[in-house]
Image (cartoon, rainbow, N blue to C red; front, side):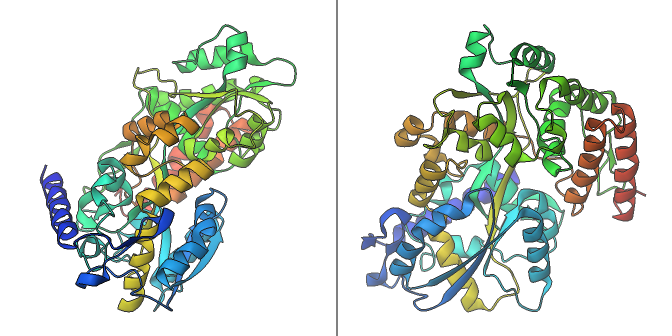
Length: 464
């Protein structure tokens, strides 16, 4: 409650700041910026002639809206936007190096929610609260209160003292997309088979068997040695089967995982049992391969990150008129998936002028209008509440309300508050892949994963 009270205080100060900024002089088209130079408040040209270097993930369509709007934003601000995109692994390594260098080569960095503890938690990001509440630095129409509390807790606030998500210090602005997991399915195929979207994992398995006909597989998954095999496919099954990932706490140095629990084994066994009703090469599928298979009509059901599978609703998608979404199956009656998404942050190791200009650009690419363009054009999951209620978006992308509901109910990965999160997810994904290729049974894979992760926790000092 104390955290919420502090956040309400921030929002109240922002409202006062916005009111004191007077009226908007001009609006910057679709990007939502504004010139308030008349009364000495926000000046969209404050960084005229300055370069702002931004690093974004490649392959998740977050960069595409910025590419489209780059010239428009540059014309309005006078800034030179220098965009770099990298694949997930390379981006993480590059950001880690830059944040620890004498001076970062990037002014804005893309922070995956699973790496917040290793970046914000390590004191490597600039605190953004003073920028949000300063009317000279933030447009009056920015509306920080429009970001939902759940996403701000994950890709916004972090308590560097306790090492936990939340607190009253803001280090990231959610963006360019948030997200969780939905069940994407071919409505025409389920209708023809007389099926409704499954609500339990046993139903999912039975339906996948029924839907496997000819060259169409009943189900798909991420089966490759890819962290999403753990984060989406295994973890969603695990928590909705009643599993609890951790016991103890990192504060007490007795943090333990429960991978080899009955729920952990059952979650993997469900994936193994689906192999006969999945594409033959599913054990090599990453998200791109799974998306491609669904998009060309070879898959009937697919649990997926909504922000990636949203491309199925794009104007060029062959299945855009037959795809539908449903909540994830849940044996415990509480459909939910993992909380995902990214935050945009400013490295702490920058000159103040760079930080100020980075923030100015941040206000443009996380504005209401920019997000509407990004979501409408590239079907990425929204960060703002107003996007959820926008009638244009609801009409064009009928899955968005379900995606937002999934985000609201999403569960933060219990180990996301330690720097070793990705390493742990990788170890579990490796064992999942070995099991799906037939090298190990489910019990052996989870036993091996338990041992590997326990060793990581001990080396990290989280378990004595």
